[in-house]
Image 1 (spheres, helix red, strand yellow):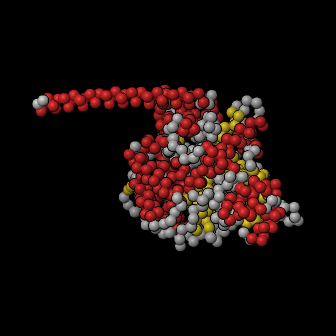
Image 2 (tube, helix red, strand yellow):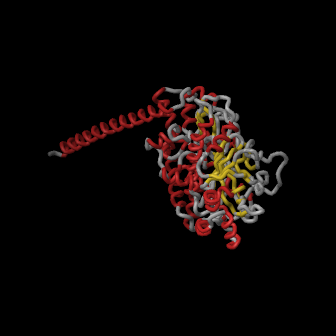
Image 3 (cartoon, helix red, strand yellow):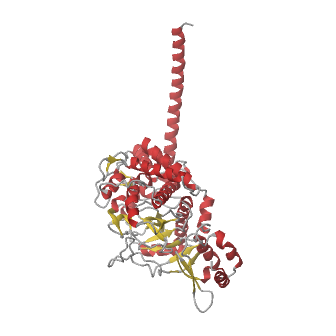
Length: 495
Length: 64
């Protein structure tokens, strides 16, 4: 068995509220947001034909009644950058297009914030006077309700799922020291703390499982490859926070991808299994000094930082012997730096980690105004940190003040809103939306359905995430003026 | 100059340097405080009005 290229994509459910409308309907508000988006998009039927969120990667079929509600009647659009933008439960969700590497995945995640900002601003015309939409890229309302931020990594089907459980669990628990977006207080019955590293840890209650909405598991077993099921898995990582910080997102996605490749190649030498993984998840998130010992299943203890140090060492060794795409060098440098800085002085990472930036801001306010941790003003600051509107969002204020490092220019983010990634099938999807949007009648991750005016609809399967790239299809798209000629050309090429 | 005098001069010099350094760091410290104050003032100007009410009403449905 050997590692396959890590195609990466993120999904974010955004918090939504309406100023001056306390009793607003979040499903309706989310629909208005998605419908209002005037950027390049095709309003289409999302086809659930290939989707099976109830299928379990451990091999059993759907358990009774736990298949998540399908959003049949709700709005669904595919964007010119290949993303899916729709209403999930009671949130607007942006599922970024498949990216070729972690840097690109970070860029397209950032582009999602801009999509939401533009959509919310365009939606104002449909609201009553005095009402405005507020969109937060966060994962908890502080009152016991959590909504997701998921990472997806393409993994070889040859890898036994139990290997992922064995070798990835402790990595996911300990990475919280650099993946958290920070939260005031605790939820879901966990012990009281003034502040913790992550938004999500309090909501995790199982080691492995299919659920995402309650009794959330550290390893999610949803088995929907969105590609050739004989060759691929899509590992659906639900234990992560939505990050505002670009550098943080890069470290999160890049470290995860390297460790998964190393697991596929069988070079992670130790499971580093923890004695009580679920309790350890809460413990790491609640430990602001980052020095609490975690009990190992084999006996002895280690801190989250010490265990992350092991993963980094293995990843470095792996990268030395493997030909990885260029951004992975940057990932390893940033990963090493953030672990060193967290060890030396945790708050020195406030220039790149959301939790540290937020904590430092709250601390500045406490110093200036003599506020208690329970002060409503701190709650507001902590929430507004995640506002995606650059005029209001405190993350952006810190960034403007030079307190947060950036990876991308505004121009790069804007391009990523309209242009798809060039090196995955998202290219074909996004370009088809841009050029043949009127003829696109349905889409999902691994197919597009066209109505080219002929008797029957034509379905174009895209079971290979690394086909449909710019290199493979741009010439074809250039010379096909309409969907009918595209389909004819595809038939000839069998591309 | 005797050794002692030499040492004393050195010490005086280093004391002066230290004094300059500490004055500089006080100045730098003041600058940092001012910068933070400016930032917090700016944040105060964009912070949601009726923050207490906004936070109280902020309830989301669970998702995923």
